[in-house]
Every structure is written in structure tokens, then in C-alpha cells.
Amino acid sequence: MLDEADRAALRALIDRYEAIWNAQDYAALRSLWAADEEEPWWGPEEEADILVGWPAVERYWRACEALIARFGVRTADRRIKAIAPDVALMIWRLVWTAELRAAGPIPPPPIGGEVKASAVLKRTAEGWVFAHYMEAAQGPLPFVRRAYQARAEPDLLRSPR
Image (cartoon, rainbow, N blue to C red; front, side, top):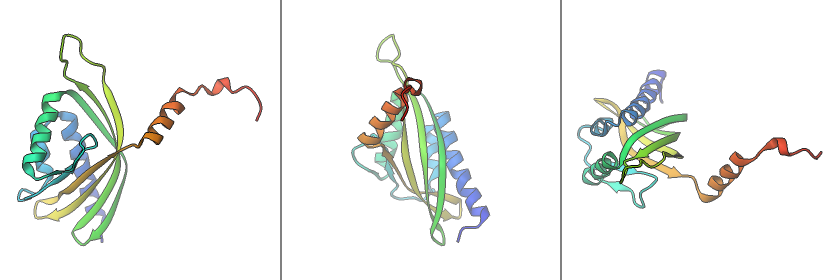
């Protein structure tokens, strides 16, 4: 159902998503959605609830702008699946790093993470746009496992198996 032009346009949409976040151009995030979208759904990993509607989503973006001094993202492992003639599902990994605004004279160290992201994307007269966006943080077990794996020093394993 998706030809190569569709797949290229969908990849370009996620490239634009990435570029907007890397530029911290919060006002431009709305351009990822159809101009006539009445009720966007946005599920950031750090929020307890899914944000429903423009007031909630834009309040979240304004809070990000106020809280984050510098921000960067990278996407990887993108996969696209058609679910209807003009609707696609896309999943990817999102790696992010943020430097929060300092509350005092000493800026806090950067923080970062990796989430699983998914979006329902629809074809409109404007091109492909978001209809739904969701992030899922790592659960405690994979998070702790990766922390332990990062600390491992394989050269200490001198004994034979």
C-alpha cells in the first residue's frame, strides 16, 4: 500500500520532527500535524497521562521550552507499516539528551534517555502528518540491566568457562 515515494515522505516527516526538536523550535512542532487537526494525541514518556487536544499539547510544549536549556535527539531503527490506504504506523527508537535550565548559578549536568516511539501518520492534502504520537520509556528491568552492562569490565573475566 505504501510506495517508495510514501516511505520517503514518511522518513522525511520523522527527519523534520528530529530537526525541530534539535533546533528547539517548539512552535514548529504544530506543523507536523494537519492544519485542521481538532484533537491531537501526544504521549510523552515523562507524563503520567496522554495529552489530548491542542490546549494540553501546547501547554506541554511551553513547559518544555521553559524547562530545557539545550536539547538533542536522534532517531534510529525506524519501521513503517501501512494500516489503511492513507494511514501508516511508524515505530522508532528515540535517544535524547537535555540540559535543564539552572535554578541557581551552577547548571545541572545533562540528562538523557532512550524511548520507544510510535506514531499514527495520515496522508492529507498537505502531505503526511501526525495523528497520534506516543513514547514508551524503558521499564525498570531493561534499564537496570543496561546500567550493569555498561559497568562491566570484560578484561576482569580471566578464568576459563
